[in-house]
Each structure stands twice: as structure tokens, then as C-alpha cells.
Length: 119
Image 1 (cartoon, rainbow, N blue to C red):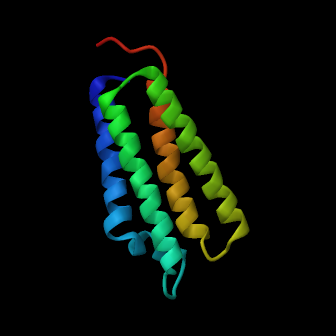
Image 2 (cartoon, rainbow, N blue to C red):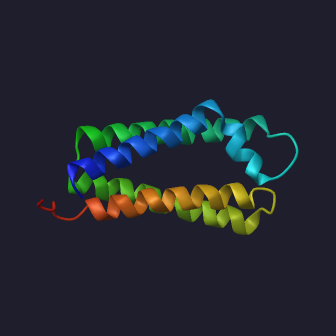
Image 3 (cartoon, rainbow, N blue to C red):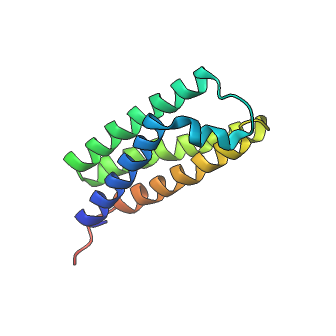
């Protein structure tokens, strides 16, 4: 992955974190009608903080090992979202939405974990 790719991924991650920090209810309402529990909002904001830390790490140290570690974290997160979707009809849509976002971040991380591309 090029430096511009690392920057683009970091910006996308910051944007997603912003959504989860500022309006987590919008994403969580994808889980269905009804009030969004305060605990779910807290979890979304904690995940947003993780995304901000990960974006900063990737931007400050755009190396293969850092991208690979981030890809592992994103892959595990996507897997946990799929597990939640399988177990909870209430949170299925929100979990699958987050799994898709995490899969995109994981793919970008795996692409950046190899040797740098020229060009």
C-alpha cells in the first residue's frame, strides 16, 4: 500500500470513529426500532476510541508490521460482529454493517502489511 493509501485508510477510519463518537445512535438504530440502550452507545464510543488510536498508529508509523497488527485487530472485530449477528436478531443489521466496515479496514491493513509497492 502506498502512503496515500495509508492516509486514505486513516481518514476513513477517523470518519467512522467520528460517526461512532458523535451519533452512535444512528448506527445502532440499524439494529431495529426502539430505544438504543446506553450500554450500546458506550460500546460504540469505546470502539470509536480504538479506531482513533489505530488511525493515529497507522499514520505515525505506516509500516507493514503496524498495518498487519491493525489488520489482525480489524479481522477479529469483524469476526465478533458476525458472531453477534448470528446470536442476536436485535443487533443483526447493526453488527453486519459494522462487520462490513471492519472487513474493509482489515483488507486495507492486509494489503499494507506486505512489502511497500513502488510507484
